[in-house]
Image 1 (cartoon, helix red, strand yellow):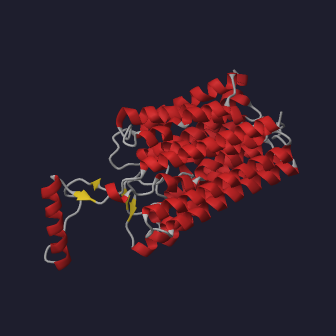
Image 2: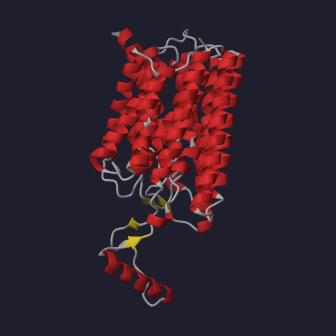
Image 3: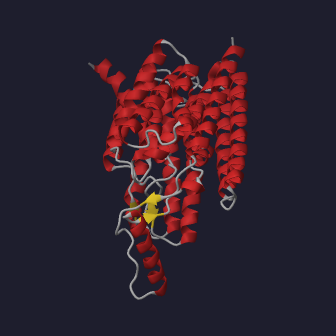
Length: 461
């Protein structure tokens, strides 16, 4: 019985810790969030979102490296529990803060703690097949599904996704604490070599920084034409993909293994998943969040199970790329309802197969690779380029009430009445995305990653 507990407890802790980290490190495009503040302060709050996530991703690899350099598995679980406790502290403090600056500070603390949780969990379980696959389910499944959650309009929040639920924080802290209590104090974490630590940290730092800078560049061109926007996005995507290929080959060269494939695989998964993630954050989606989490989790588990028997990272990416391919051919297909869950299942199964087939031997490289989807902000931008020719969003009637006796309100009321007469309900400009071109661009990104994985594995033979 004790052997069973000691093997199952770390797996459960890794699953929950990775899922919590995924929630904290997710900054979904689109959605239903809003923060009540001035326009200038809202811009600063929005700008802080990807910055905090980039910091958290780098800290995931850094925490893993530091724990690998001289720590027991029990110490790693203690660090993970401390990180989860910090996230819980931020959750409790949000309602007490005043001002956007305090929310931004809490966001940075929360994402840093989330990165530490992910990195410590990777360090604690790497080398144990069951536990490391459970961690992959939490990280990949969480990335694919937590975007379905959201707090709607709120007075204060540290992120666009809102705060993790108390039940998730509670069970995660309990599971991680149990893993620390049952861990063998003499069990040592996998040691890291200097080349492994260097290439893992350099890769995630470079990709996080490039994504953050490229996203800022894309966002600065809001007044450009549709063609100009796509040129900007295309250039940014090329930069990211080339950098990813360079990082993958650098990891392979310095470690002497095909471990660099995980960088390309997780990048390809992020690109393939973006159309689904955007639809999951639609304010008009009627798919329950629990259904999205269940479907994503089961699909990733199925993909990992296949990978355990027959590793095939390129085949996994080939399955996942079906989602952007369908978006390019049939942009309006599966945007809601059961077909949205089908698309999520397809990308989840492909992601599980691809990631499970490319899990590296090095824990540091694994921490860096599993953090990459969360910083793949350029793919977010590609999936949310607005199509100005077909841009309409429906909002429920009565959501906006003009102020009586105010001249500007009377003008607004007149315009709104005209829209009511035309459409039969309240309509507000809500961006429809350029799904067809996004599907083509993201398909090419996944194909590039698959080609890179195939070339890297051939070079290592």
